[in-house]
Image (tube, rainbow, N blue to C red; front, top):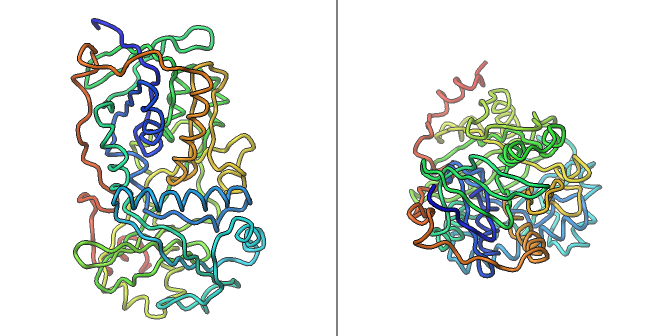
Length: 418
């Protein structure tokens, strides 16, 4: 290393939260962002849906979601990202409904009680009521991510933290491995926005193991995919199954089906998100069961589709009061924590669409502690030659690596015929 590079803010993690933080701070501060594999960001597993807040069990959280949805709708239009507000239909259990319906009125969320649309027949569902929400958003997550990240690409680096050099509750230096080259950074502030990778950063900082263990919860999220000319242009929540429709450039339609199991397999502490969870065939079959309960001709329809499935990790921050954040029963559905460090902050949004809200609060935290001291690194910096220029970023559900099968083969492989 020939020199050290001073910087106002070092951001770790290049998912939507990291790049949104960068967009918030870079007009006022020198900022660089480091991520070891942008193409595998948790953000790209996202199914491209953001609710207007109808599913939030806390009144304040419902309002935050509604405002965030309106803001994203405008931002996506300004960025010319493929997006649309959509009629989202939800068949909701009565017990759950009793805890959230009042929040809709308080937060100004438009809704209407109507039957489920075709092709769904609600007669196969347990006791429920059905609603239509007109302000939910469906959009291309990868395109939105690129629109935020591309103007910042000269300050985005592919690399990872090799080590921290710390004083008394202060990060004094950070050694980065950038494209195989060691670069020493002297940051005024360090912000970790790595999703599940935040726990690895905390471990590197020497944060107490018990705190790291309880910092976040991670659960596997299965995305069951059906594509074909006969896929209906309908999005819905069917008690426990999310059905999300996307039109494809081929003229086909795509359904992304995500089942919320009654008891999710939550893991605490450090998880290597580069290793996807195994496909749980029982969960796939339970998704089929739910869908077939509301589609009388499910088998015939399924035969007209090609099928695939993938699984990724969904990160949830328990927040200062534990599980309520996962259940959307916490007034601020994202979490910021410094763990006793003077110049460090970890950030967890509970949803892709809350990245701006978390970035705004993080910006307040930064401005209360720092006035810009350093220029943006340039040609004199060891970092300059490695600035990121265009990464191959696509939604996981659009990946060419997915294996698509006809219904009979897929059902047999998943054990549905058994």
